Image 1: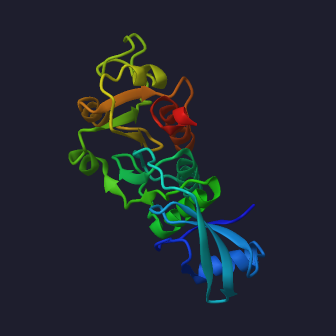
Image 2: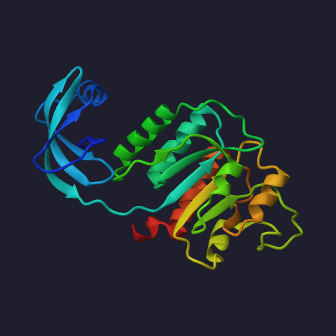
Image 3: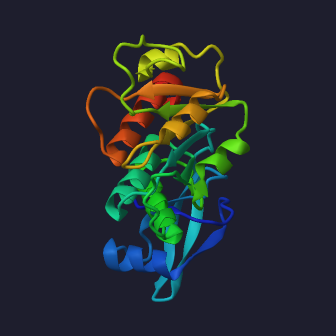
Length: 256
């Protein structure tokens, strides 16, 4: 396979672009590439380009940009809000969310979040590597953690929020409305009256949301409460399941 690299620089046929030390090391020492070998470059703005390695040295290299192979396409405006969990689970969430097509990753602090310090540089690197490997033309942005209340305060009204509510509602209540049990994902998404311009998915912490947080979320007009089924899911599993179902119902998976 021809390696794909994300380059934070303008891309244009016939131009040369520098490769930093990390990329040069990856090409030379990990992939065993040499000068003259082919690579593919993208920057999230100009599409994807064929390129050739012109120089590989310890401190960096140079690639000569050839023809454009893919034009830049609009991707879904899809945000994942998730409470920080264990290091390995967060890495899985970042990697798989990138592959599924999330454009923004927002860690949130809830009342039951076990707030571990996040290495945002490492998480952004995981997202970049996943984007390079899965063939997408952009890299999702990993934001710094914020309190859930602060994120919801400035929420764009055109963005629907799929709230994965796994609190175990009263089984005697009917499916449907925000005051009753949360509906299964596909059923809930079909019931959304308006077609949202963008979407977000909210996954809670390992201990779940508190009653006050659930009441607050269900009172918001843009929130769509859903359940992810009869089993208790790990946070990383829940994020993947929710994103897959949303992409299938309202995202770019319908055009695949």
